[in-house]
Image 1 (cartoon, rainbow over the protein chains, first blue to last red):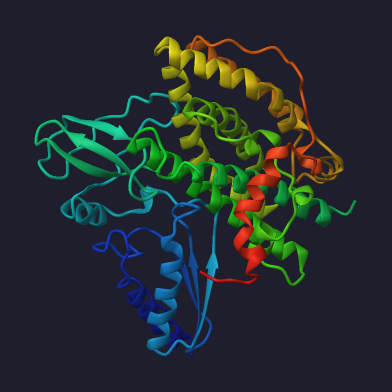
Image 2: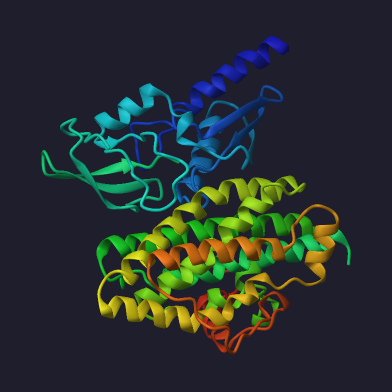
Length: 166
Length: 252
């Protein structure tokens, strides 16, 4: 029984890592660090713990439905989703592989920013995901989704989105 | 007052601040002065709605009654809302909205920092999460305050006007009642007197950099946390709650 649960747990992680983020479909919810824990109670009963990226992120509702659908269709009839707020989600939980996928998709991945300064923080230049140059500037701290900001590359003269360091 | 009832009411107060300000910011949708700011103001709104939802969900758990977070948002009357007066003030122009955001975000940031040390795990979890977002709002609004103050005569005048108009609502942010005293005594919440000093310091720092002056305390009014509001909240709620009132239980 214990062995079965371990097998099931791996299976659940595998299923979850196939669920894409609706806004950045090249990345899964596991790669983004949104799945914090999987607990297999029995062969049909599983608890998935999620952490929200941003409090108001509308994609959270989509994830929950996708998780339930994916697990139900693989025989986990009872799926419970728990939300964990602490520790708060951070872009540090994203792997280098995930960041590279993001860049290849045309979104600049998060780069470390100085933490202490709150105003007009001297943010280091974000690397343009198109041409790889660093002559870029911030256009707006906010973008098309809560997790992104708008930047512009002075070298290739293209706008691009930057996944905020959070 | 029982701790649980106090905590329920306290959650509503925090959530109502977020919901009401979120609704005000959402009123900017498609009306922003430039596209980037239209996105910024509505993104802030989204964060605030998310924070409100987290707190309403927690309040529902505490209540152990057959209510939902949506009921709390859409089916309570004006006198049952406990938000501070400043967040319900109408948007005015862009400077007015930003000054209101700045004064409130400075408060919300300090509040989150304090609540991270709450011995109530749900509240400290909320505060840890919300702090990251609130810092971003603080940064966005304070940068604009500094630009307004050092920009043109027009931008400076508008920012100073907004500050003068809104200043009388700021004392209301720090009003404590029985709820606070109960929660402070059990280590769930903290004295707002301590936060007031830090708030004043943080606000003055930005105003100095913006070359704006601190207004006189004049015609101060208070009452939000006791459910006593300015005339603006009722009008806002009538628009926000219209659909659920006319078509109860309607789903998106």
